[in-house]
Length: 220
Ligand code: SAH
Ligand code: MG
Image (cartoon, rainbow, N blue to C red):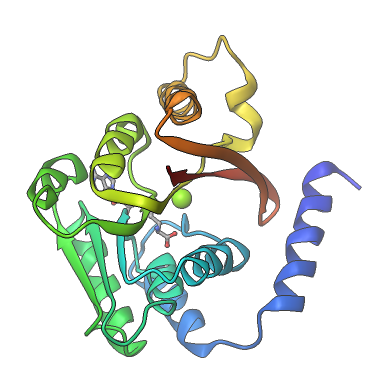
């Protein structure tokens, strides 16, 4: 068995054990595929982890950076109470449109706003808003260090900051990498690890047949 086959089998094992049939999530992925969106959404295993994290802190206000077709958005928004709110930032209007229709079908439109624009342009507009309980960073990788600064600014003690794709199939272990994405993620991981306002770790996770990770931090 190659490593990738093993990870695929492990991912499938967890998926089958913990996730029952979910037509809403299946339809969301199908609609995204039909609209030609890239298949770079989190896996079900990762979506479930996001939901468990949100539930565990009783999150009422969630900020997501990088909506795509709203797949991770649905997992997170389902953790919200009736009067909770999720704001998701997305650069591509086409992605936002697919996400809005998926959220509508999921019965979550009342709790979720998808706002179109560049993350780093939209985040300053939130400086005066009520702090968020959970921030999920999953947009363009070069902006991750900037997103981290904003995430810390827009949260409160006890909030969670979660970032996707922070292992890059292990490429982050190459200290001499010149790949822009890898270098940005390395800077992000180093910054979040060194930040005295946070307690953080990096969780290696299967991602289908590959290996990726999520960096998790709690605001002290
Ligand atoms: N969270 C989603 C996947 C997001 S993929 C899920 O797991 O289901 C990353 C998304 O970030 C893409 O839709 C891309 O269009 C968007 N994006 C890219 N650059 C961005 C930017 N500067 N600001 C906001 N979103 C951006
Ligand atoms: Mg991702």
